[in-house]
Image 1: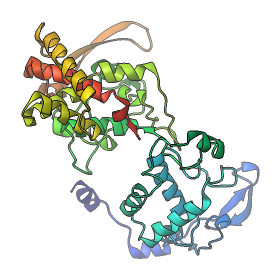
Image 2: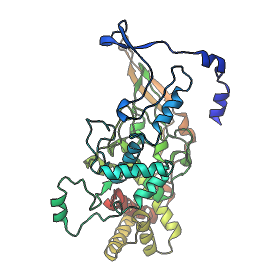
Image 3: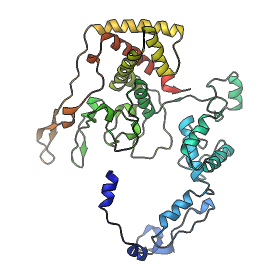
Image 4: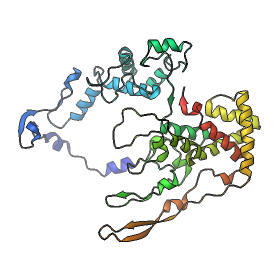
Length: 405
């Protein structure tokens, strides 16, 4: 709707004006000097691909010709690059380990025939991303166990760990982790598309002062309604100068540089973020409330929590330990009672005048917090639910939830 309104106000150039427009002469600049025009050049494509294309000299049809060349079935790059990135998303590493560099300086594919076959199959299926996902996820390579009955043999035959005799466990990416907790707790809004959303952020980090173009930038304030905030992280607003600390802790790269492959670290701040962070605590409380709303007994509640988090019921020893932890946590939550959290609607800033250095203060009004509706809060539930939330928090911290095996 917004796109149509904007487009309706933009005047398109007439066909006659566009057909008569011809670009200025383009030349190679000798030594990079703008005043030393050398050999004239014309629009063309990468010659190394071996696939020629006819690019018009005039402006008309240039982008169409380039697009047709990019998606041509005989183009050796496009399908392979797409397939390699999707493979990397599922396995943690691509068939070619340099997704941004398929040239001669990049690492050669570990399984070139497999990469070629997947690329051809991708094109044959009409460039369907969904079909490619299904093909990979139902393959024997993806469905293999993360352990092998003869690990010594695997290590001897595959010392560089490039094979697929076993599935190499990978930790969920930062966005996947947040989305998984929202999905398990039943709070995820699956709506697709639309404008960027502003999820919840740690309050201390959200209110940190920051500068833009020599002046103070407004504080980060989340969207007022849970249905707006709790959408998939791919739709979250990304600010280069104010990144979400929860996501950066789990290796989300910055938006100001290309990242061909994410690093996966295991550091102490991740433990604090998952056990003590507001994001995971809110999701654990949501999961506990969801479980108790459905389960008929305490035993069923534990099995349901395990099923939602791990895709299986609790084993006997796990069930006993979970029940004991739930009872102890419920007793701890009974005293003192939960207190209601308050969100500020005004904040005082202190700064120094740029020219004189004189200190001054000013008040910033956070209008969005006036209509802010928080997620389920501890004071809204009883001690039994808060106790179960402590158990759900343990499940969120388990490797079985954090890793794909």
